[in-house]
Image 1: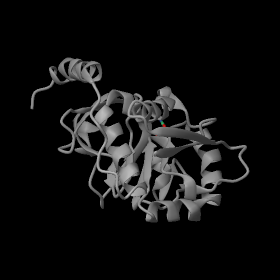
Image 2: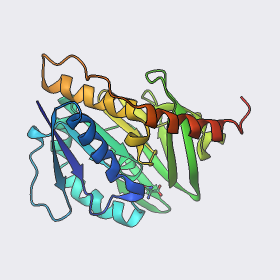
Image 3: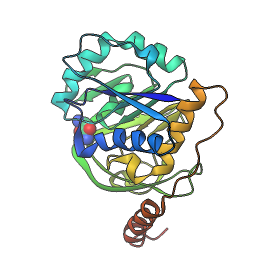
Image 4: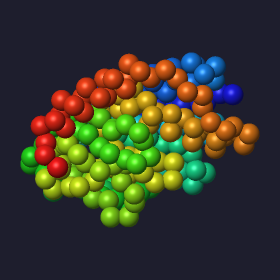
Length: 243
Ligand code: GLN
């Protein structure tokens, strides 16, 4: 078995070790003797065939970088739409997540998004910066990460990625991100997957099931170290809040 992972625009969207998400997916596949093949689509790439791709990852970047990427993405909009319709896996973080929606409004400027998700984002003068903890019943552990964004994303249609327990947003927003079909869109940098191995395995399982009919489930790994780091993080930040 082999999983083909496409890293979209790592030359521009590469904030806060987002690349670690790629490394994490690759490692966790190799540790189970499943091959992982990483392909990079950069702003210099001529062409991309998404038929051979099993997982797409797109990270975050500044508004300036997002604008450049946005133009590139719109050129392959139909391919990405078909990819998503084929129920393939897509993980989008922060700036990448915003671009999946209908638009990202930055002051008076309107950045057209891919419109793959029925969400929209508007930037605010006040950035949200800090640690964030989510809760999602699918995962035994809390989802931990870091966020830094001016955009506020409005999701009125889909299941969220998680309920916010701690995070800059929690005064205005109760929920964070999108979990729809095989797409996860979220503001969590961190990088997300090494900090939350259960989320990583969730995506890998989805990709393998989508590709191989006979595939049942990934074997368990020893995640004691990751889980204890997660627990420490939660203890440190959740300890400060009263519910
Ligand atoms: N430029 C976007 C914002 O500030 C995304 C930032 C990011 O990807 N961290 O909202």
